Length: 414
Image 1: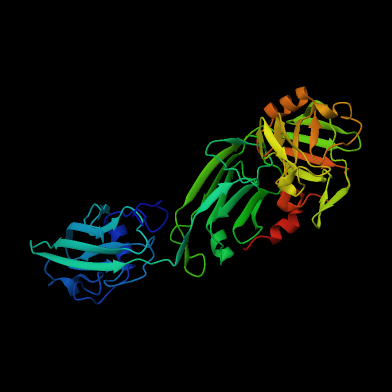
Image 2: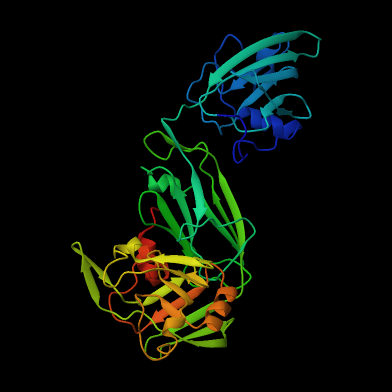
């Protein structure tokens, strides 16, 4: 593991004079013959050539936290030179206090490394001394990487604009034994402040959403500071993650099966009404599996879009060559669920749009409306389906906003 990581803790700025002396008094001591056990009593070290050097961590330490504070201090003298190298011979850059009595590395350390500190100190009589210390950092049993994605699996990109209902998902590439330890590493900062919470859906995915939709214009910064953290059973974070994005205009669409219209609002103002044909309902049993044809009621978000998209009924268990199977290229398709619900163009049902449900679950639109909605939408926009039959939208399908807030909070590990 290279010794290049985000600097997050253990790297506090050191001042000179009294502040530095107070800091030294708090450092750990050691009884190594390479250094004096205390740096706080000048008379006790007056006879030590070059001054008494103290190392943190103590010489010979193993399993040291790579984000822990590494310090070299001297009492009764000054530090002339400190050279820190790892077991590959790489020199680790460091910072010396103005009074030359304390030194620290500038960057966090790597996993499973051995480090050597070679120190030259000098006292006020001109006598010098050279001392060496070494220590080793923790060796993880395994490492995990975190990625920031939407509920549809797409990457949430740095600086991008998302809808007011965007849900941030931290996805780990390994199961997390200690969810609480992992969640303590996660943070979301917003401007303006917004109340929100993380909620685990399984041992690799934790979702974040506010209690209410984000206000338009909100700046969102998500962090997963997992490097150097034991996430349980010797599993450590491989590297930190930081991503920022902004919330765009409020796009909320209401698809009502009573009227068979999709009414679209932009920042609270109705901007378009689109006739639709939704899921025709009913079920089909194929190879012992029951497949439904409802557009399930609930609060969806826009996940992504494609023009065209190939729609294949076999992807959800209905063979293409079966009675109700299909495979066709569809234009201007805006996806809102993880099991293939889209708002999309379909000219075959224009006569039924606004009066009769004919689809296998998608919301059919005419070409003008499908193209307009495609261009209007961004991931995270809200699409609420009302008054349809069948079971309500489940969370795994992209139903995070259908989960009551008190239930959402129960998914937190803290």
